[in-house]
Image (spheres, rainbow, N blue to C red):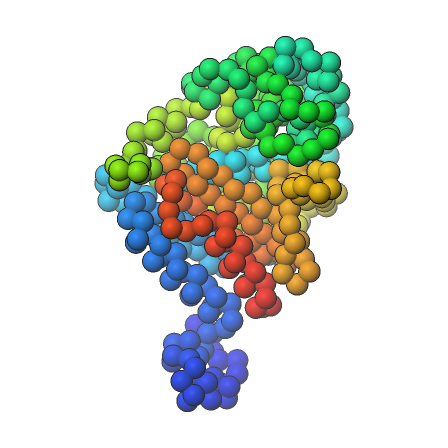
Length: 379
């Protein structure tokens, strides 16, 4: 622990009974993190189901990480800072970063029509004329007007090897809610189509494209779409508990083999440390080698019409402490929930990963609250 920076004030506070001895020498940041750790630990004990792994990054440094609870109930294995979880829709943020990496290489442009790279997209909704005008920017910002899920039985089931065929089969079964560009309308199938379009434009399988353009250059060595050895030994089992209290591990286990079309929009596995690197990439703390400043600015600039939800390319946007800006995304799939949020100007971020669906911890609320406290601490 650091030496007391203000020994006289600490002594006076101790004498007045405002601080316990262990707290007197803590910095403001350390006090925030100690309280955060105590709250998460209490919640995990009360849930008595799985685990939460948490981390805080400042700049490019993971300054704090802790794991609570079990990553595997059957084998009584505790979670660790290096445990892998499914991150659900945070995968969309990764897909958007891949999009911008291709834009800055000149492979495609944000305002390219989707049909330029994926001609089959013209069959959207059975061949609606608006399909030919929908752009990559609109898919990445959820302003393309697409419904959330395709009206196709089994679209979200099946092996990962067949995800592209599920996308192509889903396109005619995907309707428009309204005119493209008119409003924000969250669409899982829109991001699935976006991922396939990127793969077509680059002439490379989507998981390999993400690995080459984002994971490897950002140092995200534990992030993947398929968990194979040696990473498999660090994977958290996923759980849910129904209203009767019965625990379901089978549904999450089944989905490791595939979830139909849901790869670019929900297929990534990652760790606290890797998502810390990802947030550092977005704030610029890793430099401009992976994504140039202009590319990061596009990802974190509002793309949605005024008056509704503020969303960039792959990130929800909002105001932050000290007049700054927040970017975030959550994720929820069978057996797993996740949330990350970062303060752009302070280059500080928080990530929470959980291997069960419902629990006492409001991941978004907890992450945003501790982030605000850390930024306010101003260290």
